Image 1 (tube, one colour):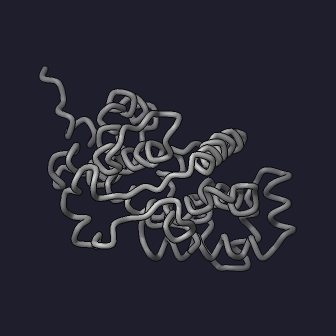
Image 2 (cartoon, one colour; image 1 turned 180 degrees about the vertical axis):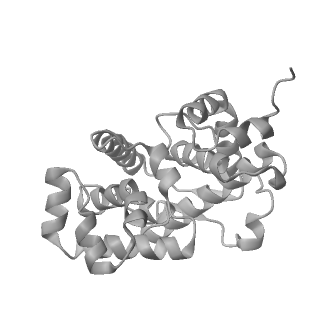
Amino acid sequence: MCPLSINERVNTIKNNETEINCLVEEYRQFIASCVQKVTGRYVRYGEDDELSIGLMAFVESVNSYDLEKGNFLSFSQNVIKRRLIDYYRKERKHSNVISINEYLNEEDEEQDLTEGKSLERYSDEELAEYRRLELAELKEELAGWDISFFDLAEASPKHKKTRKEYNEIISFLLSKPNLVNIIKSKKYLPVAEIEKELKIPRKTIERARKYIIAVILILTGDYQYIRNFVDAWGGLK
């Protein structure tokens, strides 16, 4: 029996967290290589935020891939590149720590970026350290809810209509401090209240549970350096 090609393998493990985690471990060097081509510098796991974005983008590419999209590795490389560009743009919008060359546009995103020249990073070591610490803190807090970064990549809204519904739910909750307190203290999402007020189907709310909780925790917690990640995941803007 011939072993499955990478394309066939990916096509059979969608939404299987165990199998996807195994694939991620096998392709950690590939992911790092893709990230390095965009950043133009050496990156290390556990030290560089871009690798966290790359890992989430790789998981996203697994779950959104189909055989008609061609070679999986090429497809995932493009997804990683786009997510990093999104991340840098959000960073640029919120601070002057990171910027993208002015000539970068939507057409450029579909082409290979020139290694080492396409992105300019003006990195402040202290701010970078704060972001790393906040990511570690967020990961630990989310673990208390049985939520992982894998879950967030999987649950992030992919379509405009879904994103609008999720944002509507989040805005409603943020306007009700008592509901935010219930979420944090009792560790559950008040689905009945959301359904009654917004007329959004319960199934949609349940599907969005982990994503909504994570965004609420970020926006109401002490995460000032990574709040822009909410934009990267498709949340409030």
